[in-house]
Length: 171
Image (tube, rainbow, N blue to C red):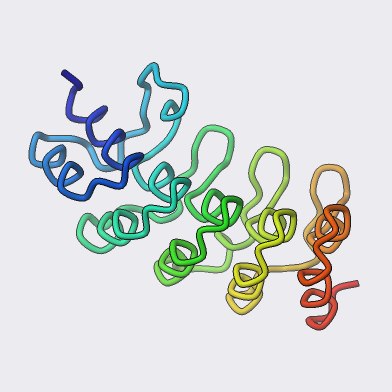
């Protein structure tokens, strides 16, 4: 059977609130970075894996009941917000934005230089782009290759995102 930390990670991946609680009662470390052999979970925190999978109720519970750091970073610079924005989990994004203390998380770049806004623009996530801009996301930040959120939206043909960014002053 899995140890408490591995059980916690699996429960977060599956979105199983009862199993998250059970793993915590068994002594799982809610701030533990997984070193398990499962490559889908390795290097993740409970909050990052739940966010990537879009399990908003688990994310909410981790933040509100267990006071988990919303800004925990995987070794390659991914945060819960980055994952949720990339995958298009708008309700999870909304919950995370409500718990983020300062704008630096919204501006945070992962190892390849993409911010939450860039991932949302790249994947055509209009509502998330709007949420991030309202929270103070910058349209001027550049990836390692010099691209902005506007460039990423254009390169993928997301005209609806392009129009929103232009209406907010992107150039």
